[in-house]
Amino acid sequence: MSDSISVGIINNQVTALEALESEIEVLKTYGNLEQQSTYLDQVSKHYQTLFEQEHGEKPKPIRAEYKPFMQSVVAIAENPNRTPKIIQQAMDVNRLMYREMIGEGCYQNQIAVDLFKSAKKPEMNKIRENSRYLYRDVNYIKDKKSPSVYLNTGITPKGYSPVELLISQTNKYFQESQLESRPIVQFKDLFKGVEFTPQQKFAAIAAKYEFDLKFNAAVRASRRRETESGPSAIIQTDSGTQLEITNLTRYGHPLIWKAQTLNIRLNEIKFTNSERPHKLLAVAQIDGEVGKDGKPAYRNLGTVSQQSVTDHNFKSGMTMQGAKLLELKPELTRSQTKLLFDKAQEAALAFYAKIPESEKLALSAAAWNICASRQDELEVARKENANPQAMSNDKPLRVYAKKVSNFAFAAFPNEIISRLDKLQFTEPKLVTIMKRINF
Image 1 (cartoon, rainbow, N blue to C red):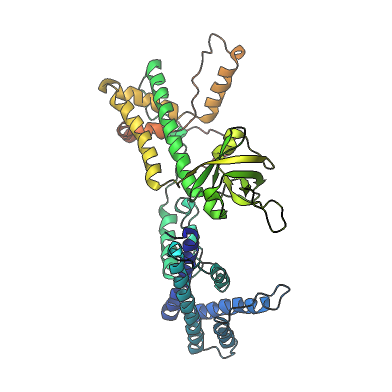
Image 2 (cartoon, rainbow, N blue to C red):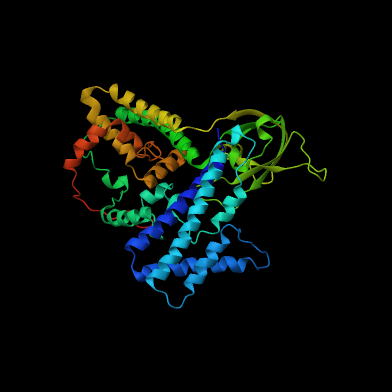
C-alpha cells in the first residue's frame, strides 16, 4: 500500500523535472541562438527572483544543495560576451541541478510507495520547496487530465520539451480537422414521412424513462470519480438524517477511520471549479478530541457530497452534534461505472429486442421525435399540463419529457444510420433567435 496523494504529487514533480531536463537537450541540439539566449534569460530571471525572496519581509531561504547551481547560472547569464559556448555552459549547469532534483524526487517517491511498510514518511516539505525552483509551470501534466482539452480548449505548450513539441504539432491538426457537434433539434426531420401511433410513442417514452434513470446514474457515478478520490464516510445524525462525506484522504483527518461520535459543522467552500465543484466542507470534532488549549478540536474532514446537499438542503453554518459513523465506502472504480453504463445499454437493447420487425422503424421514429424535440417546446408542454384551465378541447394533453438524446442512439443505432444518406436540408429555418446558440 502507499500514500497515493503523496505519490501523485511527487510523480508530477519528477515528470516536470524530466520535461525541463529534456528541454535543455532539445534547445542545445536544435535551438537557434535566439531561442537559447531567451531560455537563459528566463531561467536567470527566475533565480534572481528567488534570491530576492531570501531577503523579503518573510524570508524564503533556498536550499543549500541547489543554491550554488542557481548562482552559477545567473553569473554565466550576466556575462556581457554571451557566446553559444557560454550559453551551453549555463544550460549544462542547470541540467545538473535538475538531475539532482530528479534523484531526490525518486527517493522520496519510493518512501511514499512503501509508506505502510515503514514508519518513515516522505519529506513533502522538500518536494513543495523544490517546486519553487522550476522556472516555469509544465502545464500539460495537469491539463491532460481535463476532458475539455480534447474537445474544445486544447493544451497550450509553454516550452520545448519533447511532449510539448508533440502537442504543438497535434494542435495544428486538431484545429484544422476538429468536428463540431450540432444541436440535435436541427435533425428533427431525420425520420420525416415515417408515421407512428400514440401507443408506440408512449412505449418509447416509457423505455426512454427507464434508460435515462440508469444512464443518469452512470453519469453521476462517472462525475464522482472525477471529483471525489479515496473512500467516503456515511454519517447519520441524531435525527436519523444520513449524509455522505467525500474526499476524506484529501483532508486527512486521522481519527475518521475508527470514529464513533462526530460533532460536525458545515462551512462554505468559496472557490469551486469543474474539478472541485463541492460547495460545503465538513469540519469535525471526532470522539471528543480537544486541543492543547482544552477546547474542542475541529479539523477539516471532507466535502459534503452533492447528492447529500440536494437531498437534504444542507447549508453553510449548519451543525450536527452526536452524529455516528455508519460506514466507510470504498472509492468508485472504473469497472463499477462501466457496469452502470452497461446496464443502461442493456435496458435499451432489451426494449429493442421486444419490438416486432414490422414496427421497428415506426418506434425508432417515435423515439427520435421525443429525443429531438426542442427544449423550449417541451417546457411549454409541461406548463400547459400543469395548468388545466389553460387547456381546451382543441388543446389535448401534451407529452412532456426531458430532452436527452442518448436513448435513441442506444436503442436504434442501425435505423438512425440507415436514414443518414437520405437526409436533406430542404427547408432552412432560423430558430432560437432570442436565445444564445452557437452557429
